[in-house]
Length: 148
Image 1 (cartoon, rainbow, N blue to C red):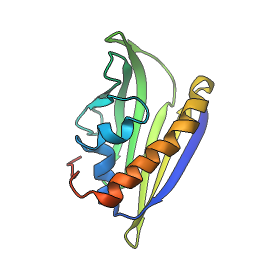
Image 2 (spheres, one colour):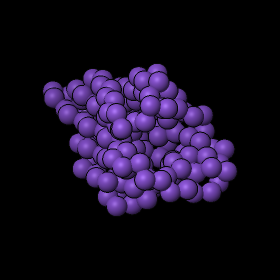
Image 3 (tube, rainbow, N blue to C red):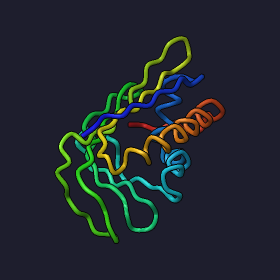
């Protein structure tokens, strides 16, 4: 499995960026870049299950591998949903990591993830657009606070 990485600097605190990334209201907005109608069902707590849906009965099943609020979130993908049914997979270290580093009111957000060749082009094209949306929301909004 190959690793890919994306990075952006956001003119907002790590708390604001975190809230945009994992907030109930903001999550579907920035993830619409990946799939219009994106949803997530989780409490974001370490060890919790997470269901990432596309609004059409398909999606991914994951486990929250780590959650250090406002600093680091690691999501381990363990399966997918097809036609509303969960299918488990052993993808090894299929982690999607969010690292936030704040300095002087700005936050460097880094996404790194393990990826199989089939999805590499899609994520190389889509993650930069998603990060632009996160940046836009974090820099102009103050309404997405979430407890994680």
